[in-house]
Length: 385
Image (tube, rainbow, N blue to C red; front, side, top):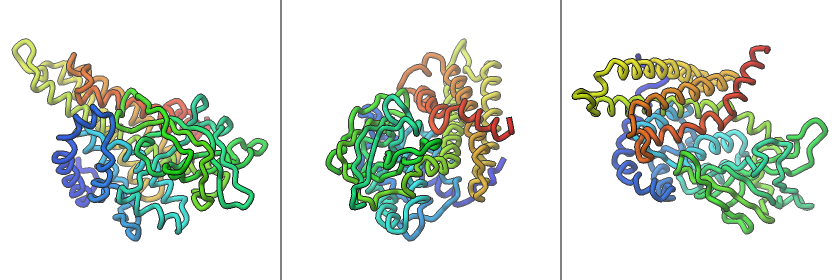
């Protein structure tokens, strides 16, 4: 069936992206994977191609294409080739929307051109060691100086995707004391220059999947942050972050759909080429039934994701609907990818196989952006339960 959320412009973007990945990413990916990091220069290349600036306004060097269909195409082509764009995922999926939504005109002029070109890669630092992202438990502080010109940042953050190569990090820190009944009050978002004195990239985290994400711990010791680098309204970070959750959850749902779709492609190829008992594995009824069942589930995910994309593009993606799309897409993708790995047999258990990477990479999707149980609670509340 024809996907109505995608048009000829999306098709042209897909063709460009597939050619680029085939010529410039796939040949180098083995080396990147062994190194555990995407080269910093790669982001400049993404900027040259316009990948980083698709949704950014034209006046800042972007393409001004707000359709979320482009993010879908990007996710599909990355998964299809079983490669990774490293920290670009956090830069595109979390940081650009935050900056676009919250930055004032002067900040947009300072930051967006570099974000679009790849010269200024962003990461987002919210979670803290031992406490996660619970507002009441955050210990990173950044009081404003008496003259109102500088925040003094102290503390640490963990699980910072893209933290290794970031040039700027959006840090959630306590800039004022909480109010009674409002533990989130007093938390602000500061855009921190990673070259500032006292900023340190700590331990590089060895994650189960997404090995090229450059995930790290960060520490701040008396880091001076100009007041002009406050992102959005002071003391209201939880609400500002929550405002971006529907888009973030749609982004995760789209990625899960792309991975499940790619998993079927890999399993079908393996089953067609692998011979057992004198005939291809794909000739056995069980293999056909398994792949058919997986395809039916992915078709259903596509319908859910496309409906959410359409709602997003029309400014009508409700929080509960985004949560529902993410829950369904990630839970279904987990089942599909697992079944497709099973069809690979022992070959699917090798860490250098595409299906094994998909299996590991996808697992975080049921945790980040709100765990599956958190989303069930949100959906139930929306149902009046």
